Length: 568
Image (cartoon, rainbow, N blue to C red; front, top):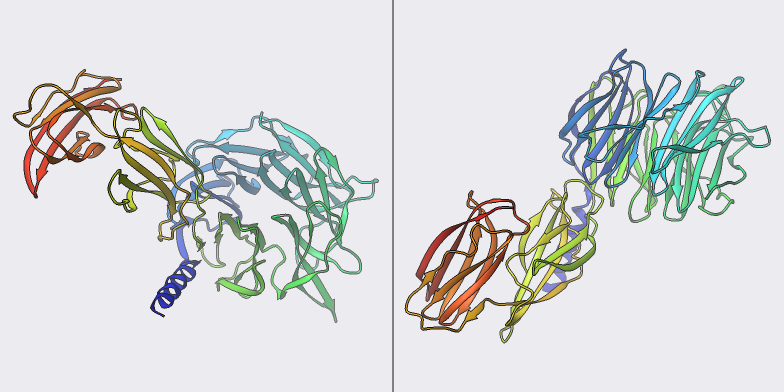
């Protein structure tokens, strides 16, 4: 009964640790905000903002998971740029926006410290645009945009930015048998497929404007026939496509009219990404506000998520469409909601009506377990590597278990933590080649976010380790520590010491700030002369201190330090 109660309490704490964190009012002041977009990866929350200023009309901000601004920059100094979008992967981020007749793109691979121009712009023409959308995957950056190029109607166009930063695969998506028109384009991707949606009303998504909702797929290099998601007599005000697993979602606003009044209900339909048959519609919200205030994302667990404006800001998930989370009681007026995911975490940004400051909130789930955890060697020391997970402000805990031969198995202990920018660790405290095998050392890793919430552990990597080399010459009369040789050294050197009686010996290396950089010996030794090779291949040039201590029955028998110089 006691065990059951403990397990229940642990599971309850785990479940309730995954929830929406408190809302943060950020220091981002954008009183003239028109539109923003949000993308999240291991470096944080990347926000791109369009404002109505006559200059400096596109800005970039990086938030950490607590909602603090890490850095910001002005992306576009010309006025009246529009339709900003941002996307990418765990290492690279792209942003796209329209300025005049051009659609411009930039990218960064160092978390927004530097932005690089895509030198070739898309010439979209001088007609009116009513939407730009982007998504990034292994094929490249996919861009769709809709221009008023067909009388009073809009047409949707597609381009892909390939790995050479060239725009390729141009397509007028709505040019099908010379009868298709449509704007308000959105785009998403699945394996080898690109999915584009458009609305045949052809105007801005204002209340009262509705049309037939359609999608069209690019399968490899082939564009398939369009599909009608919602057609006459029904009509949609705006749509949003989202892939989750092998399911394609089309979220749309169904206009209900009668008696001179109209309102919108929020619906979705689904189909398999490779099929053509759409499901019947399922209502998510009734009499919801303003057709443009909707956004969607998908999480690692293959659930689709939607966030939308009603009498507040609400979130619903495919895990249970019948329930909703009230994200905020704020009301938005023709602005936009940034919505993104990393792992199973969700991130939302918005600017309330009547306020100039952007707000931020995170749904904090357990981090994903690091993948591709393997063990190799570096200069005869254990080297651990793993793939970084997709999530901001994560550190990786390395746990170690040491089991000397002939003794009971060791226990797992936290060795160290490394930052999210690092996917490897070298344990200089153990040699994995040598003359005398002393035991086994095992490692496992888990991720931890700043709340903290922990992932599950990886599998275990195991090594045999070897002790210090005993030199069999002469008798030992006193403790001693010799100067390392060679000195200066690059990258390895040998440290010799003598132990006249059985004692517990530690030999450690420190930098000039007193930080431990290596543990070379940590064991009980018999009488003898010993040597230990120190490999500093992972360290930078400089002066280091090595210090030996010998203890017996709780008393210090010997303690001495010396300096050595590493020159690379």
